[in-house]
Structures are given as C-alpha cells and as structure tokens.
Amino acid sequence: MSNSNYSSTSSSTHRLIKNKNGSVKRNELRGKVVVYSCAVLIIIATIAITLFLTIKGLQSFIVNGVNVGEFLTGLTWSPSGEGDVAYGAFPFIFGSFSVTFLAALFAAPLGIGSAIFMTEIAKTWGQKVLQPVIEILVGIPSVVYGLIGLTVIVPLIREHSSGIGFSLLAGMIVVGVMILPTVTSISADALKSIPQDIKDASYGLGATRWQTIYKVILPAAMPSLATAVVLGMARAFGEALAVQMVIGNSKALPESITDQAATLTSIITLSMGHTTYGSLHNNLLWSLGLILLVMSYVFIIIIRFISSRRKV
Amino acid sequence: MGNYSYEVENLNLWYGDNQALFEVSMKIPYREVTAIIGPSGCGKSTFLKMLNRMVEMIPKVRVSGTIKYNGNNILENYRAEELRTNVGMVFQHPNPFPKSIYENVIYGVRIQGIRNKKKLDEIVEKSLKQAAIWDEVKDRLHTSATGLSGGQQQRICIARALAVEPDVILMDEPTSALDPISTLKVEELIHDLKDKYTIVVVTHNMQQASRISDQTAFFLNGDLVEFDKTDKIFSNPMDKRTEDYISGKFG
Image (cartoon, rainbow over all chains, first blue to last red; front, side):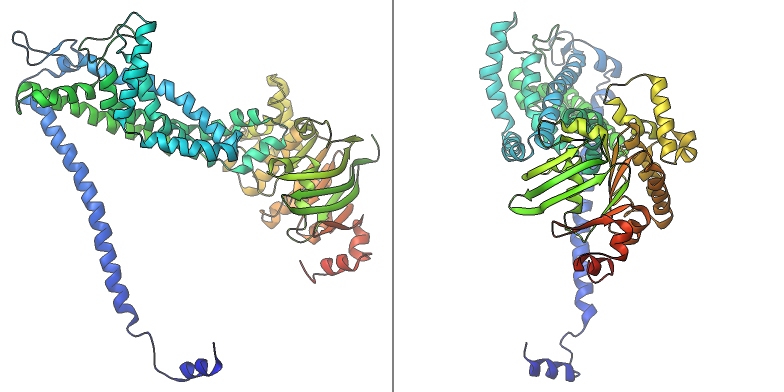
C-alpha cells in the first residue's frame, strides 16, 4: 500500500507476468481433454450397453426361433420345462406395467400434495422438516423397503383379504413409497420455479390461496409435474429387489389386486442365477431385459416430449 | 361515499426489526390520480401494498395504525380477498398468466364464480376496450398472453384488474419495464381511467408524476415528507427535502 512501492513498479519496464498465453493454452487443452473424455466415455458406455442388450435380447428370437408375438402375448411361462416349453412373458409385462401405474397412482397425489404443502402452505416449516425427510427416504436401500413390506404390509393384506398377502397391492404400496420422494422433490422444484409475479397477480385479483394454487400454480407447473410422475414411473418400472420380496412371483396372470403376480425385473433376478449361459431360458431372460431397456427409452422420450412443451 | 377513498392514520410498519413506515397519515381523494414518489427503499411500494394488504404475503410483517377504505378499517375484521376485488393492482413487471388473453382478463371474475359465457364475453370486451387494447387483440383473444409485447402485456394486466370492476387501482411503477411509446400509452390510459377510478401510482419517474397525477406524495426513509397538489409540489414545495429530491440533488 505504500507510495514508494507503487511508484517503483510502475516506473520500471520490467513485467511480472510473462508469456501470458502459453500457460493458458496448455490449461485449456488439458481441461478440454479431461471433459471430452468423460463425455465420450459415458456415450460409449450407453451405446455399448444398448448394443449388448439388443444382441443378447434378440438371440432367443434369432437363434432359438422364438415367435415374437407369442413371447409378448403368451400367458404360460415354462422355458426350461421337461415337456412342453412355453415362453409367454405377458403376465410379467402386465405385472410390470400394473405395478408401475398403480405405484404412480399412489405416489402422484401424495407426492404432488406434499410438494404443494412444502412450497405454498408451510414454506419455512415445510422446507425445514419435509426436505430432510425426503432426502432420508431417497437414501434408504430398496432391500429395506422390501423387508418392511414383507413384515408389515404383506401380513396386513393377508388379514384383510382372501389372498396370501404377497400381491400386486403389496408391490404397489412398497414401490409407491419408494418413488414418493422422487415425485415429491421434483414436483417441489417445479412448483418453486413458478414466478412469484403470477402468484401475486392472482392474489391481487382477490383469489384465495387455494384458488391460486389450483387455478394458477398447478396449471403452470403441469408439464414439470407430469415429468416428475413419469420419472417416478421409470424408477418403479426398473425396481427389482423390493418388488420381488412382496409380489409373490406367481407366473400366472393376476386376477385381482390382492392376487400374486410377477414383474419383468423380479423374474430376471429370480431366475438368472440358475440358468446356463446360452440356453433358451437364459436367452429369454435377456429378452425380458431388452423389454426393460426399450421401456426406459420410452419413458425418456415421454419426459423429453413433455418438457419441450413447457410454457413458463 | 365520502370525498376520500382512503384515510390512513398513524400507519407504522415493520419488517422484522426494521421499521419501514413511520406514522404515515394521508387521505387519498376519490377518483383522482395520486402519485407516490421517493428514492428506492423509501417505503413507497410498501405503502402501496398496504392499501390492498398484499404486504401480508411477506413473512414477519407487523403493522399498527388504521387504514380506512370507504370508511371501514381494513386492518380489522376485513377479508383481504374482498378488499382486493375492490382494489385492483398493476405490478411493476407485466405479469400475465400463461393462459390465453381471454382467460387472463376473465380470471378475477371466474374466481368469483361467474360462469355465464355471454356475460364473460361482455366483460372481456368491455375491459379490453377500457384498457385501450381491444383493437390490437380482438382477433386473437384465445392465443397466449405471454406472446404479446411488454407494453401490450401490461395493458392486458390493466384490463384484468378492470374486469373485476374495482373502485381503486393501485399501480406499482407500471411503466418502469416498458419502452417510451408503451409508457405513453399507459399514461394516456391512466388519464382516461381517472373519471371512473381512484388511482394510486408509485413511480420513480418525476416527470411522469407531474404529467399524470393530481396529488403527489413524497416519501423519504419511511416518512411521508410532503403531500399536496402536484403543481404545488413541483413548483413550490414546502419542505427542503422535497425540493432537493425533485430538483435532482439526490435519489
């Protein structure tokens, strides 16, 4: 800060920073290489998984000559049976979709409701208490959800229905609770991003809080809320462990919601261990996996489509 | 109905521990334009938002004093929603809902439960004509209001406020986000509307205040320094601080 110091540096022609561009260029290149290789690696991994699963998943149709229509719509599944070999995967496809939609039906109103509570009704209190609760729910391993379902929900259903407890209903509740935090936190972000401006406009015209919520905030946030639900559904569709523990894994089509069922994921995790590599049974499991992959692409396309229509 | 829309007495307001308004008393005349001027942070917007109690949206606000609207104290036993259907507000930034022009204008009427299609159509046409934007939008009432220009959006917002048939219109720097031509249109509109409405305008722009208002109130640091006829304030202010502000010495 002293005067003499200042004048001495300014009077000399000696430069303290030499060769300005050299190190910048080198750093720039290094950064570029690191970032680019990360991006390329992820893209390669995605393509590789897709390719691998596609090739493996198509084996049963190409090598073993399984009829695609029969595979997708057949009702009997006994791929390694002694006598008649049947490979109808429809009950599992149906099971996966049922669990997914029922779980969404369960989680969407609860998740969006608590998101509204957090962002509009009890802002400070809601954020302080609900936010950590949701984070904890996200962090609980799925096997724990399965265990709780197994010890609490399954016996409860057994007592109140004619079934044995292991059921679509149990799967729906367990998966519904699992995707609840996903739906809630994405919905809360969506609601928070609605500008205060238009809320003020609504209140300024004499609207009550509730009128503002359902006439302005919800319609404006609708595309993002739909995204939240679809993301939750994508997660529900891919969930394996917890579902397998409570759904009963019956290979027949369920007749009611309290009936046992199976999903694509639960059949894969149950059977993959005791099939021989390259056998028909093994290849069929890969085909089930391919359906899962295709569905997850479909979910992503749906999400993309919805968010491209966002207005606010 | 008396000669005053509002009679404010000894109004104090605190945001948490910070006092934002000090013992403000003023009477806002019926069907005239009252401008509120003052530097940023002087409490002028806070005061405006007291008049329709929008200030209650902000957490930790405390208020003392009385505000009589048409003779009734709105700070005691008065429903904010009812007040706001009689006291419309236009905001600093145009804030149409992401809905069609028609739905925007009709919003305040819809929430009062009016469903008659013919009546709604009439209200839309009347309000848009009053806001001098009917000719520009009559052929695209069902397209999104967010696609209009800023000036048009602001007039849609004015139409939306007029649609609920208020007595008073509060405007919080309504032209600060608009270009000069749109500003002129909104100012002309304010001039046309004062026959039917009591208008209170907060503005940063002193020329605007002198152009459009009948009385002007000057706020400084939460105090109402001076409140008088606009020509008097701008030609012969009583207070030294008012004179300094309008002559551009600070603010």
